[in-house]
Every structure is written in C-alpha cells, then in structure tokens.
Image (cartoon, rainbow, N blue to C red):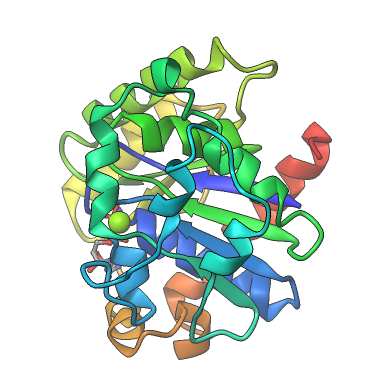
Length: 262
Ligand code: ADP
Ligand code: MG
C-alpha cells in the first residue's frame, strides 16, 4: 500500500482538489483507494456529500484511545464516495480540538500510520488531505506517508508559504528514519498573467530538484466537478486539469518506484 500526503500550510492552493484528482485517477485505473480527510474544515468530506458538522463518527474517533487504535475501527469509519473504488475516512469539526495537543507528549503522532496499517490488505493506495496548520494532524499525515505532494499556487507570495512548509518538513524529517520525498506542484497556473509566470520562474530557481516540471492550469471544470461531488476525471476525463493531473500521477508513481519505499 502506498500512502501519500498532500500538504501546504497555506489554504486555497488546491490541496483538496489535488488529493481527490489523484485518488480519482488511481481508482479509474482499478486501484482500491482510501482518501483521508485530516482537515478540521472537512472540505474533502463535504466534497463527497457528507457533512463534517453532523457526522457522529469520523477520523477523530481514532485519536480517542491514547495513541492505540482498536482493531477494526478504521474499517468501521470508512464512508462511500461517488467512486466505487474510493473509500473516505471522513473529518468532523471535532478534529479542531486535537490541534491544541502536542503529538509528542500525548503519544498521538502515529495514530494515522497505525490506523492505515490495518487497511494494508484491503487497499492499494491512500491519499491524505492535510490541514493548513502545523499540529498533531499534520504530524500524523507526514509520519504516515511515503511521499509528500505540496501544491503551490502560482501567484505573488507563493514562495513564502512554501518556505514554511519545507522548514516544517525538515523538522519532521529529524524524527523519521528516512527523509520524506516531496514534490512541489504548481497549481492554479494562468499563463496569461505575469504573476503566474513569475511565480513559476521563481519556483524553478529556488526548488529545481523538487519541482514537478509541469503545472496544473486554472480550469473551471474542477469547480464544476466539486459542485457535482464527482472526481475531476469522473466529471470530465479530458479537461485540461485532468490531463495535467494524469501527467503528475505518472511522475509521482515513477519517483515512488525509484525510491523503493514499501
Ligand atoms: P485547499 O485544499 O488548498 O484549501 P482547494 O483544493 O479546496 O484548496 O481549492 C480551493 C478552490 O479553488 C476550490 O474552490 C477549488 O475548486 C478551486 N481550484 C483548485 N484548483 C483549481 C484549478 N486548477 N483551477 C480552478 N479552480 C481550482
Ligand atoms: Mg482543503
């Protein structure tokens, strides 16, 4: 099973969209996929038609056992989505209360990793949508993952948020056996604007080794897909953004193969 996190401490950069687009493409290819919503806002949960304000059970339940995860609980929490091969581990607004706790002191940093270990045999791929804050949930997302995708909006000041995310990663890498490979993905790219072009150039200069050489264009079909509650490829498999996400997925899969992480 492969586990990827999508994270950036900035909101509105395309994290949720990227996680769902990649999950959708993997599921289209016959993979059994789990998407995990670790953002207390619950956007991914809402995307698939579940209400994070009224859910009785959510990923939050996994954190209620002092760092242990009862056998079978992760499976019980899974909800269905618009795609038969994507299961959702939903967020609820209660998640916000966790952010105040320190993962080190409370032993809660590995809860998601332990939970996913229970899903190992039934699923091929997991995509985690991370919160925009550095707290126990972000630590869990990064600790559970073999690869990190960092969407960055190609606009003025994009690099500022990215610097913060990369230094968070450096900090978290100190407690990992192996540094977490990461891939920076330029999003919401509009070739007609100076700001997009400039941001892309800056990314190429500052992060040549970790930058995906493509970009995800601004594409209104993505918003339409989210309104319909469908993955972008279910909604329109030929849209420009879906073509770009397809190329990104190919790149991410090849990196994963090269690094031989299981
Ligand atoms: P985040 O999870 O980082 O907060 P989202 O994925 O929710 O960001 O994206 C924010 C908004 O931008 C959403 O309304 C989403 O539909 C839209 N969006 C994301 N990526 C694109 C894109 N490439 N083109 C157009 N709209 C996009
Ligand atoms: Mg989001």
